[in-house]
Image (cartoon, rainbow, N blue to C red; front, side):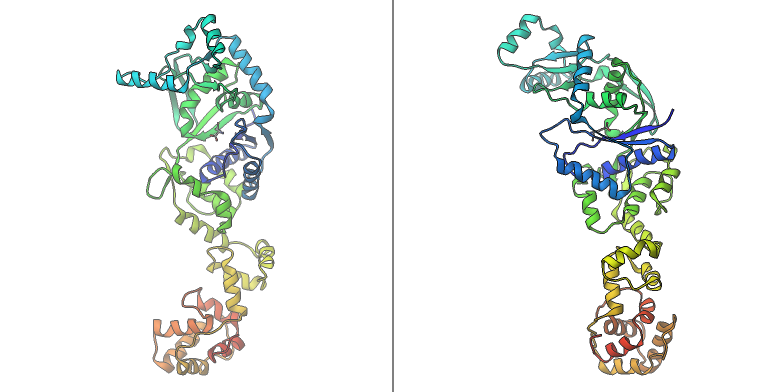
Length: 444
Ligand code: GLU
């Protein structure tokens, strides 16, 4: 059996690190098994779905390298959902209910006040045809509930191990709203069957849904796929990330200059036993992925880890990969310069400042002209790789300055800044001519 998975986002917002992790784990699992990855846009809610969000989802996935093998829109498949609903109605599993939200709410409060679980009491199943007709005459439209078996639904979860949900402790889920809208539950199952999905991989917030959905798979004649429910993301403080996910959108991270491979390595490896290091490629991440490496505790999302992985990705980026981006930023100084600069980068765009320090113009900040003159006096004739240590030793011998009092004024003069990258790397790249000018207070 070849593996087929789906990522099913609703185009009602931007992709964030939580749903991209789901997409990525699906993709890695499928690619590691030589299987297929389906992008399914869950846009049954026509009022909340927008083409802009849909486009954003595709752009983000493509940018990350999460290429899909098939793509579908639920909004083009309503006839399939109607057909499935008709079958469930015919077999008595889908029944009309007429309660208003207020009525249901009042009933729940009474149940709770009596210490009973607030489960739908199935009063609608007792309605006679006359009572239904009377409701319709009043202008009420029914919503449609799926009649659960009320049994223990069990499955072997790829992530959680043996899992069970007791559907007797759940309300019969509403599959179709009174305005005719198909809620997510039924279309998802119909599509999983029609598209031959073998594994449903999603967050553990869907465990309860799975109990009901397995019953729906069975009621529609299956087959029932395998399931994996991943532990959710928590922040560095251990608190659930769900409320902060809105501010962790992929498009924003892209604007902030994160590399796709840093994001995918981070999201693909947190909460697993793999070391949190940057991968060589997204394909390599797929090849090494296994659910057996995924722990049961929540995955800790810490931006400091992402920053570290992002720097790692840049430190090993070869010139051929970097070159077009350097050219686009107007700072392609050739392979040796790239190789010298890349260990200093946290974000790719840092290279712009570095390039400016090398090529100028830099306005030097000379606090002590006598010190600058002394430093010029002992500047080595040719600047080899060890020029910085040779030179600073000579300046120290000449002026008696040491430590911060030695390094800070030189940095200030040569770069015009108080902080910055490793001077030992920069000095040979800046070159003698510019260094002489800057020591003399000239912009160069
Ligand atoms: N559209 C659903 C969601 O984003 C899909 C859940 C699923 O994977 O079944 O939560």
